[in-house]
Figure 1 (cartoon, helix red, strand yellow):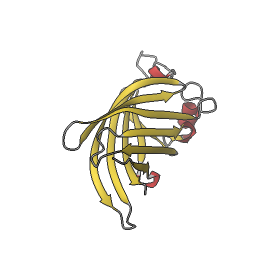
Figure 2 (cartoon, helix red, strand yellow; figure 1 turned 180 degrees about the horizontal axis):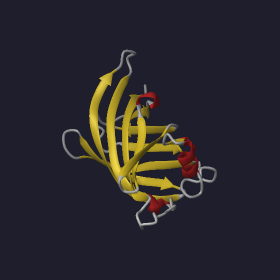
Figure 3 (cartoon, one colour; figure 1 turned 90 degrees about the horizontal axis):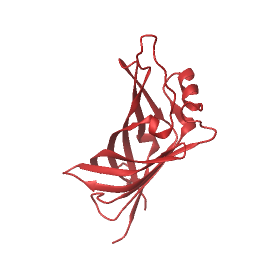
Length: 177
């Protein structure tokens, strides 16, 4: 069988995350500069190989002050660690449109295996004749596993930023010819 290659369409994809603040509200953010590729030898993406990277300096949460803190050594240290990467180790079908995506996530030169849930939204040919594939990717990581170490408590002892980070991505891939 021949290998089919897909690349991410950044103008129709979002790489988002959410984290609890003070454990009573949620702060959302995203990476705006990223690349991804998928290789598959079948039409349903089962056993596909996925590679992803994001420039850590492209993180944005809508607050310049918070973004500056996230780019510092307390979190991503964008000068020393300019990219985060994900390389799949498995992409396994679990129902009509569902998949389990496992792989190695590297942040700050620390690599951990993570598991993500993927919903395949289907294939479509765009008005320019390009075949597109749509996916929703969701999961959770513990930020401290990757040395995103900053921590603070309120005077009453409450947690300022949760250790759990939710990943929520909407991805459109373009078939390469």
